[in-house]
Amino acid sequence: MLNILFAANASRWSQYQVPLRRAFDAAGLKVTLFTETDAPETVDYIIYAPNGAVSDFTPFTGCKAVLGLWAGVEKIVGNTTLTQPLCRMVDSGLEEGMVEWVTGHVLRHHLGMDAHILHQNGVWEPVAPPLARDRTVAILGLGELGRACAQALAALRFNVLGWSRSPKDVPGVTCLSGEDGLDKALSLAEIVVLLLPQTPETENLLNAARLARLPEGAVIINPGRGPLIDDDALLAALDAGHIGHATLDVFRVEPLPPAHPFWAHPKVTVTPHIASETRPDSASRVIAENIRRGEAGEPFLFLVDRAKGY
Image (cartoon, rainbow, N blue to C red; front, side, top):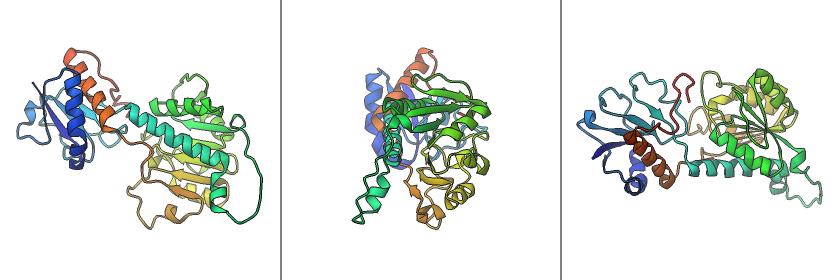
């Protein structure tokens, strides 16, 4: 019998309790699942989210792995008390949700939907957008989510550039890497989608200098991490007319404070961190499979590289 601690926000317990038990049963795992314990040394695995109650992992001396419910690990990867293996969440439902959100907003900007929605002024202006094959979209970040979004957009015949810190190969996507590759991607992209992890190397990746490299009128879509963009530099580029619009789902402070200038800016769309949400059913299957692997002595899925930070 395995002891498994659910250490996420208490509000999530009602959503995950049944799917987790169902997934453990399907994987043939005999478990005791609980949300708090007076005997942390007996815990075999921790199901974790940063908004839960656990921040000190020192007492969990018997814990074989910490299994995250979030794709991002920036809030835990530097925790010095965490000596156990850490796995991030890569979930088919999360991936599908991200692809749908990114594709929807790329098409929205590509087709110029905002103009039709906001300017019903009685003026007949039959201006057609270019075809997707004539529109360049850059995806910054080619992990699981970035790769899936890049391939979905390529399937719609967009000219897709994919950039990553290290070389990648994605069918149907022109892959670039390194600083020169980033310069090229930015100089060509009419729409930029940010799907990078938050690390010291990616913070403020889109600063004033890099925003200036984008073509005039370019659109920025950020469902990745808020700190990837220098907020002040973005606002300045929007006000100057160099950046045409920014659709932002993630922010440095969440919820986004009511007084933040993004809310009222005419060239900013704010969505409340909904681009992709972990789905309890599919996430529970990922958790169960990783515990099965741990018990069978097989490598964990989606193991975090502490040196890289993701």
